[in-house]
Image: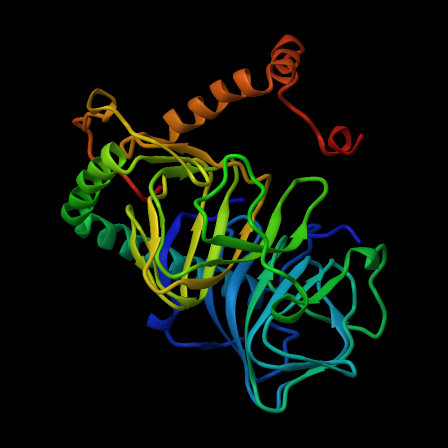
Length: 85
Length: 289
């Protein structure tokens, strides 16, 4: 069986897909908004993460950790931090 | 696969909808988790009502199904929570029914949901690829053997591995108190659904029971934590390699370039061959050689 082969979709199926895709776009937009609202909290979490990897260490592999030197900590770029693509 | 980045999404926040697509019996309700805009391939949480009956039949798409609550009778066999099916396109299942109802995850991998009533397999269906396993009772938790690996306390049960693409379907758990201090991205898309429990990811916050994500390749995620532990279902659409780093500010493009640069160092012979032969357009037939 040629899986996923092109089949002629009935109007009912096409209408279902159109409606679902529209709802998905709305869902996506809502997520983007929610994630933008989380930005101040996320920035605090990032600073806490930077503290931990300098003290407890960064997880390199399984149990293996490496302490990150202060000069290795990334500088925040001017651009907005994007988490949803 | 053309699905948008859906993360985080909790299916508990939306109601079930009646399945109205032609061919499906009544008594099936769903919540759409993600949908491929080009093919209609999708992942849904599905509720089969008590008394639901589906005649024997097949789909034009590979299907994956994980029973989470209740049970389904498939032919003569009663299938309870933890039962996982991979049903190749065209492979006919016997009649399916439920007396008390069933909550499941249902995935159509190549097409929109479709059902063809039939007592026989479709032309060319490959029944040898059919998988049925009770992941709760019949599989053991494994420590991941990926290199580099997740922090101790994240365990896997592999349900399916695609020998051509390296795609994986699996159950995973995080033990209570799990913590992993790095940022990760992969060369493949990754999808997960929380069957039980809450985990935290620095970029997205908490993902509770019923939480879901479809994450396209090269997107930063992590560190991770879970206070009380989780049980989840996950999938990838290709080989899962953990690119670990500690820069939360990198972009998709930078991550992709870093992954390519890594290939140069980790698989220099392969990288050299690809570049020397301008062989960046592998086809399915070449992959199978």
